[in-house]
Length: 93
View 1 (cartoon, rainbow, N blue to C red):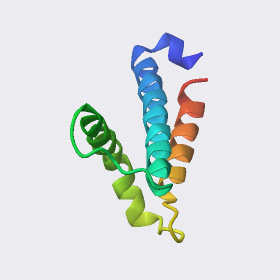
View 2 (view 1 turned 90 degrees about the horizontal axis):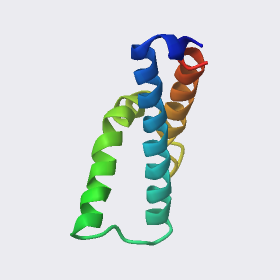
View 3 (view 1 turned 90 degrees about the vertical axis):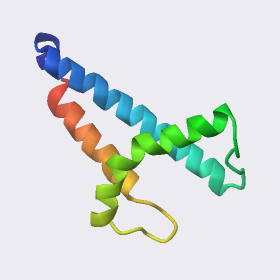
View 4 (view 1 turned 30 degrees about the vertical axis):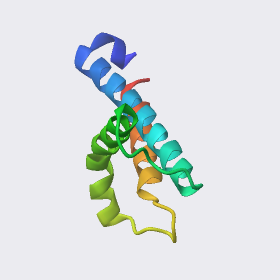
C-alpha cells in the first residue's frame, strides 16, 4: 500500500475522501432545492448551507469553464467525482 507508507499520500487520500463526501452532500442539497425546498434564510442552517457551497465552489468553478451544462444538469460535479475517483485509485490503493 502506497498510502500506508507515506504520510503525505495518506493525507491526500483523506482529503480526497472528504472532498467526495462534501460533493455528495452538495449534490443532495442542490437536488432538494430543485425539488422545491427553499434554502434557509438565516441561522445555523444557512451558515452550513453557505459553507457547503463556499467549500465546493473552488473545485467546480474551473470545471464549469471546461464542461458545458447539459440542460439543467451541472456535469462539472460528475467530472469532479471522476477526477477524485481516478486520483484515489492511483494514490490510495
